[in-house]
Amino acid sequence: MEADEAISVSTAVSVHHEDVLFLGEIITCQQIDGLWHMEIKVEQMLTGLQSLMALRSSLLNEGVPQPFGLVPVGSRN
Image (cartoon, rainbow, N blue to C red):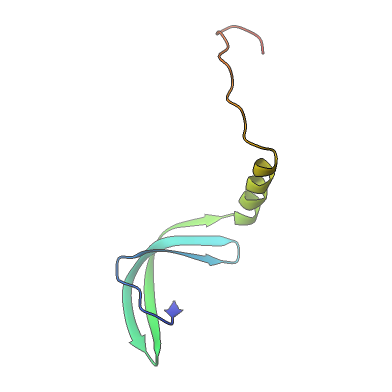
């Protein structure tokens, strides 16, 4: 990864590329030819972000769901 400024080693970062979110931390950061070059140790990859964002939008537009009331065991809903 390249950046215009340095990021400290061990800093937690997220990188969004296409429909994937990479979560990890900076393990090296050095300046080469005026740019900062960093290596990231990826801990997790989240995919399907477009579907999650659409679901989130849908849920937020419908309002906040109300909690269910207590129903005794064996009762019909």
